[in-house]
Length: 307
Image (tube, rainbow, N blue to C red; front, side, top):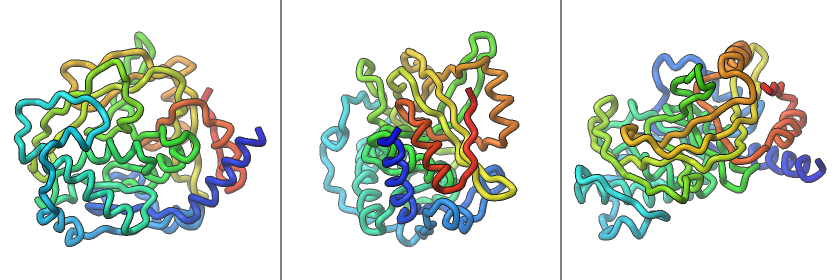
């Protein structure tokens, strides 16, 4: 208990100084996380830094010095034959490019709205998945709140947090399929399964082909939590879930996994919806509920647990 309280106090200090970079602006009509950046700053601490297209356009002139992309990746990979040498090089150069931006601007996390990207850079799914392993916060689609939640989860778990979303539900077997477009903390991957890297042509985005790592995460107990808005500010919704022991699905070309809540899945989803949870979540290896509870107590933020 004392250790958890100390870690919560440390996290309060780190969040106070955090900076979240946003690339591609806000996502139109994503109302469930369309909360003022000022609320995030005033209540939780992280400040928003907009990263403009001129900054991202520098990627086109970024040194093309990568000849063996695999040497930049901390895992065995199987590259799809559809991925050309240029796409492979761009995917790996984006790791170094984003690292430099994060270091230069002293960012604790980033969020990228793929619809706001022009042709300056491929959507850096592979880079995000690798940088999450270094402790970066991340949120998809311009969501600074999920980026902040993931960063908080990183602080509580020695960099074993990730970003995800509930995609669909198996009511018969009571589990939820979790995924997103291509971003997942690569350090959480199953070590007994290969990582496939596949092509995404980004027809929903900027039409610049990019590489996506495909894997599922290590099974076990995880904390799923959401940072959402209320009429009075912010709230944390948390639950301990099981990540099931499942290999990656062969016909799904995104990183993905399955969770089983402690209660029937329909009851869990009803409770989550009634609390006003948004559709982007943080998923953290292990049980960090006490740390979250203490953090919320210090910050005077409502904490709700779905058991």
